[in-house]
Length: 158
Image (cartoon, rainbow, N blue to C red; front, side):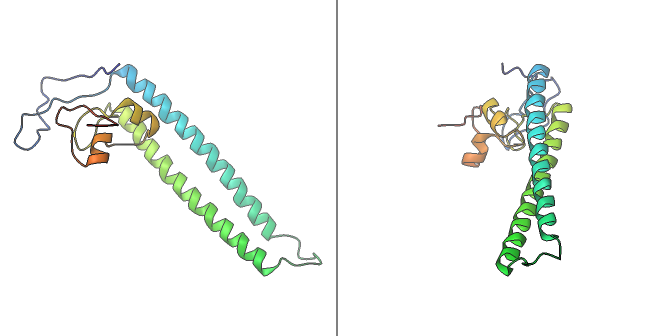
């Protein structure tokens, strides 16, 4: 279902020494499909964020155990707790960055540029967009660091 539009005034992006490439985009139907994929990824990331926040709260509560306990926490346990907190903070930061990129992807869906390689100006393969909904590069460019001559993104082979 690779519907795309090529407006007549699409002489904006010409490869060096070549004919101008027409502007391509996925159809409105395809974009709504991708919006669902991105929203699902966002929902999953928010759920993971919630679980990490709970973990962080649990670690903080464990560290604030009652001072009247007969046995204080061993230093090794305190070190392990600090490491776990640090790892959790790193994961939270990673998910925050992912959520930011998902929001950018939703903006691209809204302005109908989602799924177009920022380097090659070709449609990114649907399989790639489903697997990596935040991508802005075609598999062809990502793998070979060059745009495909025929303008078709291929995940495998040449």
